[in-house]
Length: 317
Image (cartoon, rainbow, N blue to C red; front, side):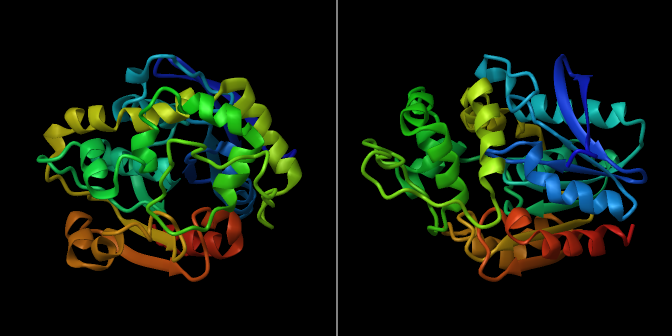
C-alpha cells in the first residue's frame, strides 16, 4: 500500500484526490457508495504489476476530494466533467474504465457522453439504465418499491442525522456485510437498526479493522451529504439527460455482478440483464459474468477472480 502514490489534481473547479501506481495504459477505477479510492487497493496493486497505470480517484464529495455543499453540484454532468478533466490531466487520449456501484453509473454516463475517451468499460454490479421518458426515477421507484426504498429515503434531509445516530462505523459495517436480497428498504423508525440493542455486526472476512478505521476517519471528516447528493440528483439527472433518450452505449463493455448482490436481486434486473434489451441498448456488450455466492462488493470479496476477468477483457484492446 505504501507504494501507491497520492496527489491532488485541479479538475472542473474542484480539487480531486487521486491514488495511482504503475506505468502503461491507464485503467481508471471509479468507486461507489459509501466507499473511497481505497476500495480498489487490491486492483491498483494487481494492475500496476500487470503493466498498467492504475488510477483511482476519490469522487466529488468523498474522502480527500472537495465536497461542494449544493445538491445541484452533484449531477451526472458535474461528476462526468470531473472525470473528463482527470483523464485530460493524465495526458492520455483514452482509458479503460472500471466502475462499481455509483462508479459504474458514472461509467455508463461517461460512455454515453464521451465515448471517444473510453477504450472499454467494465461495469461491476450496475447494469445500464436507459432513460424512461415517461417516469421520473424517484417517482418510479416509489411506485414499484414503496416510499421506504432506500433511494427514496436518501432523498430526505434527515438521513445524515440517522447515519450519525447509528454511528459511522456501524453504518459502514452494515452496508459492507449485508447480503439481504433487494430491494433494500429503510423503515422510518431506526432505519438501520438499533446499535444499542442489536447484536454486534461482524466485518466480512475481506475487510479488516484497519480498513474500517480508514473509512471511518474519512467519512467522519467529510460526512455523508456529498455521497447522498448523488441520489438526490436522480430526478435532475433525468431532466438533464433528455437529449440522450434512446441513445445506445457504443463502447466495448463487460458486465459483472454477484448472484447475491442487492442490485441483481432487485425485481426486474435479471429480466433486463438476461433478456434482449441489455444487448440492444449496449450493442458492444461482450460478456456477462455472474459470480456465484458473491454479494455487492465483488471486487473486494473475490479480488483475484474479478481482476482476472477484468484483465482478460481489457488485454484484448
